[in-house]
Amino acid sequence: MRKVFLTKLSIVAVLVLAVTFLPKSPSFLFSGASHNQSSEQELNNGKYLPKSENLTSKTDSSQSPANKSEAPQTKAHQPTVVKTTFSKTSTSASSLPFIHPSKIILAYYSDWSTYEGYTPDKINASNINILDYAFATVGSDLKITASDSSIDYSNFSKLKILKSKYPALKIVISVGGWDDSGMFSDAALTESSRDTFADSVVSFIKAYGFDGVDIDWEYPIGGGLSSNVSRPADKTNFGLLLKTLRSKLNAQGILDNKHYILSFTGEADSTFASSVDLADIANSVDYGFIMAYDLNGGWDSYTDFDAPLYIPAGQSPNYTTSVDAVVRSWLNNGFPAQKIILGVPFYGYAYTGVTNSNDGLLQRFSSATTVGFNTIMSNYLSNPSYVKYSESTAQVPWLFNGKTFISYDNVNSISAKAQYAVSKNLLGVGAWNISYDPNCILINAIKNIIG
View 1 (cartoon, rainbow, N blue to C red):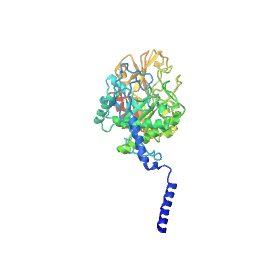
View 2: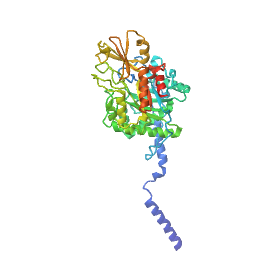
View 3: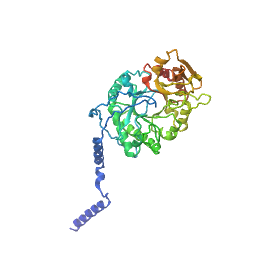
View 4: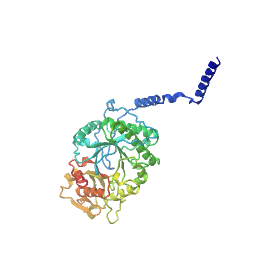
């Protein structure tokens, strides 16, 4: 009996010790199930609400088509939101590396080109490595959504047709732009909002067959449309947003055995380099696209060059910068040359009511509009009333007929910019946008230089 009694006491003692040192709640035993339930609830609550919005060109003075109509918001275009999760201590999980040619040729395609009959399936992508579809937007729910539901979903199907013709082509969805950057600051504001946006991006690119995402926030801290939300914290939050996107894309890439591209588009103005942390951002993105154009335009008081390679001698009455100055600004602020895509314009500006002096250069004008290279070729270069000029330092041409001044880029100036990109060991050259060069005259000029 004594032995049995002692044994029972021993058992009781063990139980007391066990109860004493175990955690107060046994929930740790079921943490995996709780996590899965939470994820399932969030998955079931996630949705897309496509909306129609008028879009304008990436350049300030472009006009959007007036005949855009809003399509019904049907559930057919609401992909399931997949919440990509990862350990808080391992947010830098890597997927496959970014495999690319030694020099990249990138081109944007604007969705409003569809209204002019230039649909994505008509693009000649034989000399294009990456095609950026512009634009998607950030909805009020802080999720990525189509900007123009009346054409975008049809275009996404046409992009798949294009990719079947060019299997090596990478197609990236670009979010934001001049007209659709209003909600970026809110999307980047908190860890929760960044997760919401990044999860929606992963789901979006999976649903519509994109190879990555380009963040075209115009602009962090300030600038862009007056209606845009902005705050001083944008500088830090932009970097955090890109880090979140990189982690989510990497996690999905591991599952899919592929690398999803992450890029961003940045302004040419020197203030942009101080509005973001370029050195930090470089750790998250595959490349950055410099909009090295719109250096002068209809917002100025005098005619000038859209994208001069270097600043010409003499004093311009406008604020003056150059492609070279912009690139050096990015480099000086810690962004590596090997991750820079140099943006070049496949368009120009036609200034009217120009004073007939100095061959139209640096003169007062009454108005200015965007004009594509294809239109310049067909309507102006063949017009004998226009005289062609060029500036040796800026390495760009212009046309003038006594009252209309046209600043633009041609084969020679685009080739000079491509050669500049090679000389600076930049990753490549990118164009805004391919709809202005449907016959690939300028694309082929880039290809001839960078190979």
